[in-house]
Image (cartoon, rainbow, N blue to C red; front, top):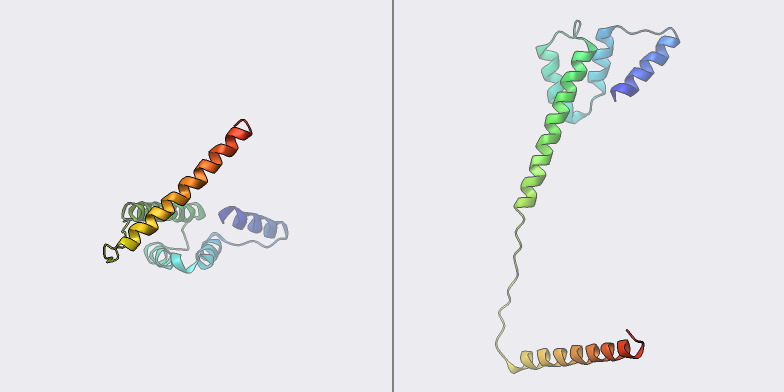
Length: 125
């Protein structure tokens, strides 16, 4: 953002439109997104914007951005650690129907696997 701002300011200076340091500081603070408003308010109250250097403002904003990124990264790590896998259980009665279904499925899979192996032998696999 700062490099774009600098390019715009330099282009305006080429057109004979200059801004004072305090005007540039105020423009940068105004263009920050809503999530940065607490930081903007803190800077406005703690520092005199008329004498605040543009580089000091940039350093302060970059420090804040790095701390926000670190906080987000820490929160993501915590979320990954807290993932819990839970399996649902359903009350079933032990009946022969379930056992028969399981046996049928196993027999079907076995037949399919045998066919697969036979086809592999045919083609020299």
